[in-house]
Length: 415
Figure: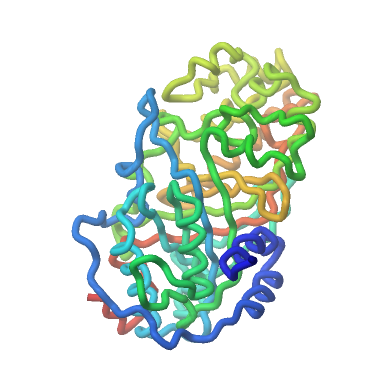
């Protein structure tokens, strides 16, 4: 039997194609305001001030690297009219109900609420504290999303994260919560994106568009491209990405891009050493990659040699040039997806300012290399640029936990 929750989960990937599809699904499922909204209640004691404080809850692998939650949902909403203090109280009540129902961590539930430029400009008639997104290379032309609210949910239980999404969008019940959690008070759902990360999950999802036949994704790979990500020293710390002062002190910024992966040539035309050269650097061997523990050592200081001698440069080799005092500028909380039946990546990054993301993304372009060696173009022999297409991009600001529900809204009282 096709339940409403299963319908929602199966249709979520279709919504990636554009807001119009998402709106159509919303009309099919209904968007009436709940008759019995969740009451406003207290938060559990001990929750961190920062919404993005996830790392301390994660288990570590044998090398001390944090293990990301295995399943994610991104839910996008627009304001329905001018926001009111009542709308803020409703959203906060829902988020607190989730905090009471599930412990903070991947065994329970992790989530953040981020607000886009339109919320501030259209909803509050204020200058936005977060920049609008933009195309950041000559070979990308993404749709620039303008959603007002992005909720990111993550945990190790796929059914749980799907059920939470269905509760917020469809009003379905959750265990232990008798009241409706439907976010229809002042908000309109627009789109849901789904995904996963972790050993075995990409291999079990590889029979989709963008990946050649023959099951080329290794069973041990945590991501579709076959290599580890999120090693401890190639990620910023949560302290590094936290805003230090002002109305958003204790918060961060988040950049959300949807990348369609083009892995036919990645697996069909490149051998494993060639993939290592493009992911890391041509000076890096497969044996060295297998010994990486806490960082993807990719010899950024040998970039000129890679350009002139090899005519190939690596993704890690170029992006590592954006480090500050030897430390990356971003925390990546990205995850693979098969939304729309295509292999993809929802690239979610946290950084203190969007400028840090722009700096890192610009370093990936390696524009100087295309001048020094004509065998390197914006995409060919240039890291992994040839193997993805940026479909959508958006920027959000993630306030502290106390300010997460309609930040800067006048008259808002959430105590």
